[in-house]
Amino acid sequence: MSEIVRCPGCGAVNPIGAEACSQCNFPLAERPPAPAVAEPAVRTESAETSAPFFDIGPRPVRRRSRPDAMEPVQMQLWLFAGVAVVMGIIYFAAQGFWNTNVKPVEGAVPEQQQRADQARTALAKDSTNVAARIELANVLYDTGNWSEAIVHYRSALRVDPSRSTTVVDLGVCYYNLGATATAETLFRHALELDPHQVVAMFNLGIVAESRGRWDEALSQYHSALQADPPEAMKSLLQQHLAEAMAKSGKRAPPLKP
Image (cartoon, one colour):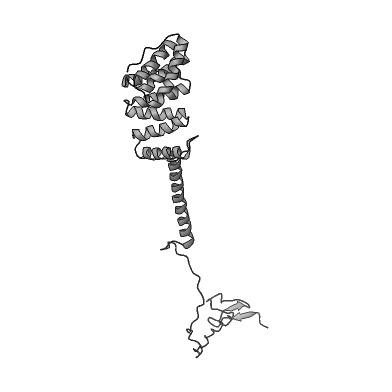
């Protein structure tokens, strides 16, 4: 077998196995035949189906980068958050209303509690409502909540300082808390506002008794009886007047007819 290959193009001699001629680059090795291209089978539409001729198969669904509508789960989360916020607002508003308008009064009976609630409701609308402020203070006074009553009596007197009865009640609160000097000052101030303030006279007599000043107590009780006190108060004044006369060794002047 020859070990050379002669180029069919230029006749040059080339070694066996060379792929191309060294002189003219003519291809010498045989190339494998190109693969046959398979022609697609002819598909005909059957009578049983109306599928198209070309079946491209299912395509994956792609999520939109910017959806036009909110996803159902996301919408539910937003709705839940909104409801939670609204419920929180309602809760704190209700708590504020309860703390402001429905605060229980220690020692109050239902009727007193109702009066206090109504007064607080009125004050929530108008904090300068003197009548409502005094009504609340009176409930606290009647139930022995002296310190709280003082706060409201003072608030009322800041708006209307001419109320002598309120000044007297404020003095009684201080007296019951042991602030006797403050109480006496307030009772005297009530008499400056109203010289016929019977309760202020009576309470000044009580203060004088507590300090052993029987002559002064006798004078205050006598003045109170002279000022035409209510019938319910007369007997109490007469009892204290008799005790003051016994302690002081003096007799009170006769009452004016």
